[in-house]
Structure formats: structure tokens, C-alpha cells
Amino acid sequence: MKVHTENLNSHETYSYSLPLTPNETSQPVPFTLAGVRLHFHSLVKGLTAQAASKAQLGLGHSYSRAKVKFNVNRADNMIIQSIALLDQLDKDINTFSMRVREWYGYHFPELIKIVSENSMYCRLAQLIGNRKELSEESLESLEEVVMDSGKAQAILDASRSSMGMDISPIDLINIERFSNRVVSLAAYRLELQEYLRSKMSQVAPNLAALIGEVVGARLISHAGSLTNLAKYPASTVQILGAEKALFRALKTRGNTPKYGLIFHSTFIGRAAAKNKGRISRYLANKCTIASRIDCFSEVPTSVFGDKLREQVEERLSFYETGEVPRKNVDVMKEAVKEASDVASEIKRKLEKKEKKRKKREKKLQELAENGETNGEAEVSCCPCCSVAACLDLRLDPHSWSVLSVRHAISTSDSEPLAGPY
Image (cartoon, rainbow, N blue to C red):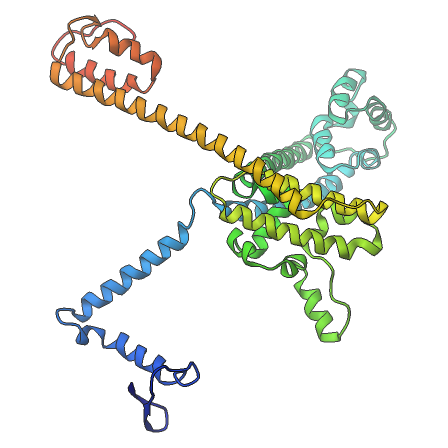
């Protein structure tokens, strides 16, 4: 093969005999391919430059759509956005709660020492309002908020001997409105956390069962996607989130970090100081296995995650008591057997659901065909539908739309008919 290419300084001719090694082709072949792409329309008969440009644009759009719709059912980008919003809400709620404490503390400073939880303080500020209006009748409503009769009585006693300043009604209204906003944000945060838990059970059930929904979502968010996390080795997952400390240790020749985001799991907190590095390495290994199972399995189940969690628990017990854990081969055999049973059960339910859906569609299609060809049925409960069609309403509520259309057609030239239609 002979390749002619133009370098920056001179024209050179390269002659090679097959097979070519990568080092020999490192310079001329990329230039040749670039030239072929540039003049491709002139090399192929019937292909114009405009058509080649449109083909390249279409290819780029198709590639982009394929990347975006890699797996519609595994929408891990929703998890990334949810965990980011959850972190932002935590910061905002904390900041706003401190603002409520400082603002309402002018009027009732003793409440800060009695109630330390931010959301509860905002609800109390919204409930109490003017402290001088508190009485024994308000004791029951205070107990519903603080869930403690002793605290409720302490708030009532403190309101009677408070050293706070008097405050105008318009100021109280603004404080109550702001407290209401903070309380609503705290309620929305709980709903968002429940949504994140449900999404993790669908996208990465094994990772969620092993390390928890929040920590698993942080790992996915930091990696960029579940696929990227599955590609990482266990050593990378172990220090994921501690990159700055890692590069600082490499630069100063110090000790590298033992854990990153997985530090927030319960296992590392329960381990002794001398075993934290060992359990973090073991946990990162299991997280990598769980993420790969979640990424490439067809039917998502949490069987492997539960088994991997049991293995981490046994390893933690081994570090503390010396009890020998089960072998990984035996645990994985049990997990594969249980997972196959669960997967077959899920597939059976899905097939049953699909059969029901097809059966309903077939009934609707037959109903529509009978209405178009036969017109009014011989035996009917009303002038626009047959008894079979009325019985079918109990089976499929979607048939109401079909019958209502037929009823409108049949009664368009006559008087309106009484009935449930």
C-alpha cells in the first residue's frame, strides 16, 4: 500500500508492506481518512456535497438521540437531578430556618433554647404568633407540634416570662408567611426523598439495597450515569468524591484517602478506626458489583443487593469478633437462584398484563368494527349500543369513549336520549 500525504514542512511519500503496524500508520492514515471525508462527495458517483452534508447532519442527530435514549426505563438522569435538588433544598431550608430563628427571636428568644429542630421551630413560630396570646387552651395544639407535653408546658411558661420585645401585627404576618414557606419546603423535601427512593428502586435496586438510596444516588450523580459508575473499578469507587484529597496527597507524598462518598454509609461508621480502610475497600468492591448488575440486568431486582449487604455485615462481624464469613461462591449461587425465581415471576406478571392489554384492545377493535358495519344492534339497551357492548363497559372503562362517539353519531339527527351516556 502506498500513501501520499502532505505534512507541514514538505511532501513525503510513505510506502508500506502489509500488514501495517500501528507505529507505521500513526502519521499518514489519519491524514488520508480526513482527506477521504473531505472529498467523499467527489469520490462517489451521484453524491453531491449538499447531500453528504445532510447525511452527516442526520447521522449526528441519530447518534445524539441514541445517546439520550440509551435506556428509557433506566432514567438515571432523573436521579442525578433529584439528588442535586435534595442537596440544594437542605442548604436552603437550613439558611431560611436560621433566618426565621433570628427574626422571631426578637419577639420570643427563649423558644430557641427549647426547640432545636429547624422545621419544628418554624411550625411553632407559625402557630404561636404573638406570645402574649398563648394560654392553657393552646397547650394541646403545642403538644401536637412538639410531640412532648413537657416541652409544650415549657414553651407556655417561657411565653409568660419572656424578655423579648413587642412586635407589630404586620411584622408577625410577615414572619408567619415566611415560616409557612419554610414549612412547605420541608414538606416538599420529604416528598422528593420518597420520589428518589422509588426511582432508585427502579433504576438501581441492588445498589440502593446495599448502600442506601441517598448514598447510591450520590455515587451515580458523581460518576455522571449508572453506566459510567459500572465502568469504574472498585479502587475508583472507593475514593469517588475525594479527588481533591487524593491529588493533594500525591503532590505532597502523603497518605492517600481511604474513602470518599461511601463514608456516609452506615458500615464505615460502625467499623473500628483500624478497620475503616479495610471495610471501605470491601464495600467499594461490592458497590461495583451491584452497579454492574443494575446496569446490565434485564429484569431489575434487589436480590443481589440484599445478599451483598449480608456479606458486608458478615465481614464487619469478622473484623470485630473473628467469626468466619461465608464464601462468596456460595452466596452468589443462592443469589442467582433467588434472582432467577424472582425474574421469572416478574416476567410472568408482565406477560399476563400484556395479554390483558391485548385482549382489551381486541374487544375495543371488534366493538368499533361492529358499530361501523352493522349500525344499530338488534338487541340493545338503548338505541346506540348493544347489550354486549354495555356488558363490556364493566370490563373496560375505556369503552365509554367509543360508545359516546357512537351515541353522538346515532342521535345527531334525532332527539337527545335519556340515559347514562
